[in-house]
Image 1 (cartoon, one colour):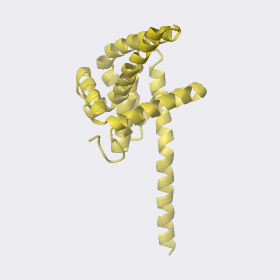
Image 2 (cartoon, one colour):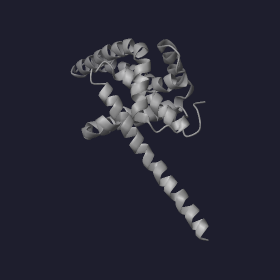
Image 3 (cartoon, helix red, strand yellow):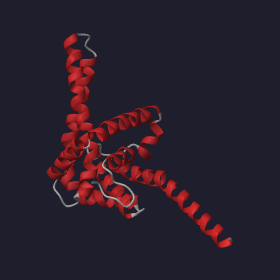
Image 4 (cartoon, helix red, strand yellow):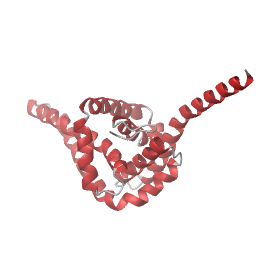
Amino acid sequence: MAGADGASRTRWEHRVLAVLAYPANLALAGVAAFLLTVPIVTWLPAWVAAGRALHRWLTEGDDRVFTTTLREFAATWRRTVPAGLVATVVAAMFVVNLIFLGSRDTPVAFLLAMAMLPVGVAGLVVAVMLPVAAAGRPEAAMREWLTDAVTLAVTRPLASVVLVVLVVAFGLTCVLLPTIIPFFGLSVPVWLGLAAAGVGRGREAG
């Protein structure tokens, strides 16, 4: 009886530790990625590095997500910095154009703004799926990762819709609670992308 109680208590403790590992590892990966985004234009390389670190944690049980994020950044920045520069410019232009159109009280401006939203949503899904693709094929080139990210988004339409809703909701949460950004601002969207792609404990994206 005592042995059974001890085994039951041990299983309960393991379950609690497994649950606590999620916020702890997300925060550690988020802090590492946040530090790497200080130059601003390195947000995409940091995003990819955090995704690869979280992928290793979810599939291999590697809890060293902070140092793994730093190592993955060193291993991938040459492939991702040029794309990060382009993505930063495109995102800035998109936001500026959307703000400009939103400030114009005309039907044409409204229609153009509405036409831009699907483009923004598609870009958001691909950006969130990019770390998943980079983790799935670690040695591939950036162009191949982008192709894989688009494929993941297209082949999982329902998951992509849910992903957009969750990422946008999390973004609004960050606006209301900006203090969580250094800890979860980058890691939570990446983790949501991994979950949408079917990556989890002991299983790969299918």
